[in-house]
Image (cartoon, rainbow, N blue to C red; front, side, top):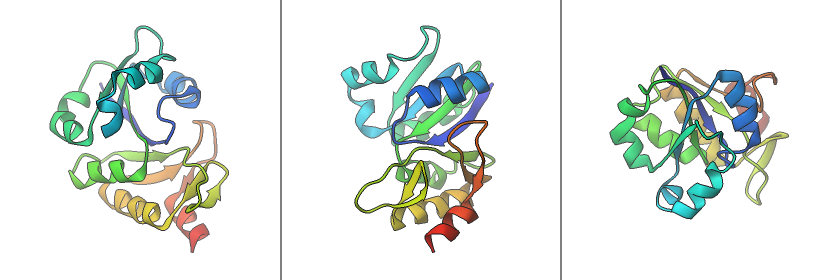
Length: 162
C-alpha cells in the first residue's frame, strides 16, 4: 500500500495517534523520523510499547528516510510517517518526498517562544515559515487533532499568527 498519514506531533507515538488515527485509518506500520530516537534503542522500546504486537515501527533519521523513502512508502499495508517538529518534515519536503502528500499538524504544545494558534497547536515564527514551505512542497498542510475533529487550513493558522 503506502504511507497514508504524514503527521507532525511532538509526542510522536501516543494514544491519539495509535488509537485515534491508527485505528481509523487502519495503520499497519509507523515510520518515526527523528534523528535522536533513531540512535536510542531504549527510547524506541518506550515509544513502541503501546503498539499492538503486529504493528511494525521503524525509527529512522531524516537522512535515512530520504535514502529509504520508496521502500518505506511502498510496504505492504497502510503506514503513518511521524515527525516531532516542523523542521524534519520540511527537510523531507525539500528532498521532494512530500509531493502529492497532505501533511497533518497535530500536537505542538506551549513553550516560551510559541504562541497559541489552536488548543493543541502553538507555533513560533520559525515553525510558521516551515509550515509555509511544507505547504509549498506538498498537497497541503492542515491541523486536526483527531480524524473526526475540525480540519483547520494553513491559511487560518497563519492568519491567527499575523
